[in-house]
Amino acid sequence: MQKTTQIYGLRAIIEAVNSNEEIDKVFLQKGLKGDLMKELEGILRRNEINMVYVPIEKLNRLTKSNHQGAVANISPIAFHTLEDLVEKANAKEGPALFLLLDQLSDVRNFGAIIRTAECTGVDGIIVQKKGAAPVTADTIKTSAGAAYRVPIAKVDHLKDAVFYLQASGIKIVSATEKTDDSVYDVPFTDSIAIVMGAEDRGITPSILKASDYRAKLPLLGEIESLNVSVACAVFLYEAVRQRL
Image 1 (cartoon, one colour):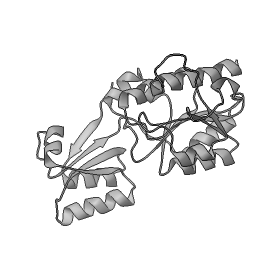
Image 2: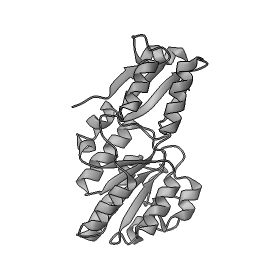
Image 3: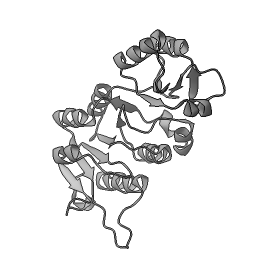
């Protein structure tokens, strides 16, 4: 299994970006000034690479080497474009099946979802560039290697992806408790994209509003929700059941 590559140093990260490395996230030291830091910040913004400002203590925990105030994670997988995923899915026989993960942040939940997605024939997973769980060694391990097999696309705004999918003939199903409709009433025989929300906040209201269907799982106990990866599996296998 290939682990996430970590690089450090201002100039090294600039060169990695210029070499089209698949950089997942960059940690920058809070308050650090200088021309090289400005150059790095500029190139990260132009390339729409996720960056976060952290205390130096965080950087020191990430690496024991001389990081110069910057540490970057290079993803162990290559990402796809949303357009390519939709084109390939619409060119195949049968209805498309996509997953949209709305600000899902736990890498192990992400890995478990990828594993189920591979088992259920999902055509692609779509995540937002900022705020989403990165693909790390833990993600790869939890997915049992499925992260190398299921194509993943990163987009600037998930709501724009929703509109693009709808324009491509793909219906949006949001998994939410804020509805009276059951998952078992949704017609998964159509081309569908299932939206799963963040562990703590659920699905963004604007995405819920734009959805073609909202559906919930019946909960018969006292606990009000399932783990997101478990809930996702139920939705995906209901789609499989209807399509068999």
